[in-house]
Image 1 (cartoon, rainbow, N blue to C red):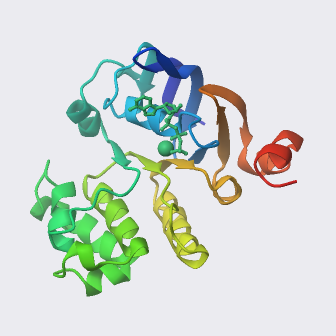
Image 2: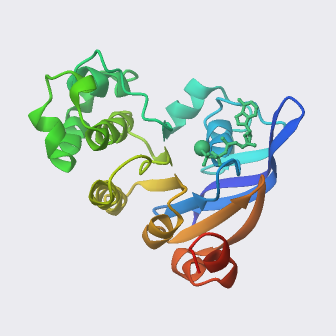
Length: 236
Ligand SMILES: Nc1ncnc2c1ncn2[C@@H]1O[C@H](COP(=O)(O)OP(=O)(O)OP(=O)(O)O)[C@@H](O)[C@H]1O
Ligand SMILES: [Mg+2]
C-alpha cells in the first residue's frame, strides 16, 4: 500500500486553545479512512487545517510525497484535495447546475463534462432538479449536491465533514452507498463522522480523536469490536 497523505505532529490552535495536539495519521491511496470522535474532539479543525483554511501551529502534511504544509487553500485544491464542508454550504439561491458549476470553477463546466455525467448518474435526484433552485432540495439532496460539487473539482482526495448530519437513517444509507461507489471508482476518502458505527463499517481504516489527541486507530471493523469503542461510542 502507498500513503497518499501523511500527517505528522499536526497541531492547531484557536488562540490559546489547543484544539488538535500533535496528531499523526496516514491515508492509504484508494482507501476510505474514517476520523471519528465525540463533539468537540477536533475533527473539523483537522480537516480545515488539511485544506489550509486554518493555520497549522505545528507538524507536517505530505501529499503524494510532497510537503504541502504551508500551501494556501487554492494551491491545496489544485493538488486535488477537496473538502465537502460541515453543513454542506450549498448556495440556496442558485440552481443545482450552477452549484455544480462552482465546483468546476478551476477548469470550467465544459472540461468537467464527464464529471457532470458521473455526478448525475450517482445522484439521480440532482438530474431531475438540475435547473431548480438548490434551496428547494431536501437535506439529503443538498448533501448529494455538496458531494457532487466537490466531485466536479476532479479531486484525488475527498475530505467529508459529517455528511450524515441531520439526515434520516435511510437517507444516510443512500449517501454512504454513494461514498462506497465513489471509492470503488478509485477516489481516496477521509470521512469525518460522529456516526461512529456507520463510519467504521464503511471505512477500511479508522482513527479515533479524543480531546485533540489520537486515542486509537486500526482497521474499521476491528475498532468496531474494540472494548474501549464499545464503551465510549457504541453504547455497549
Ligand atoms: N472558531 C473557534 N474558536 C475557538 N474554539 C473553537 C473554534 N472552533 C472550534 N473550537 C474548539 O475546538 C475544539 C475542536 O472543535 P471541532 O469543531 O474541531 O470539533 P469536532 O470534532 O468537529 O466536533 P463536532 O462533532 O461537534 O463537529 C472544541 O473544543 C471547540 O470548542
Ligand atoms: Mg465538526
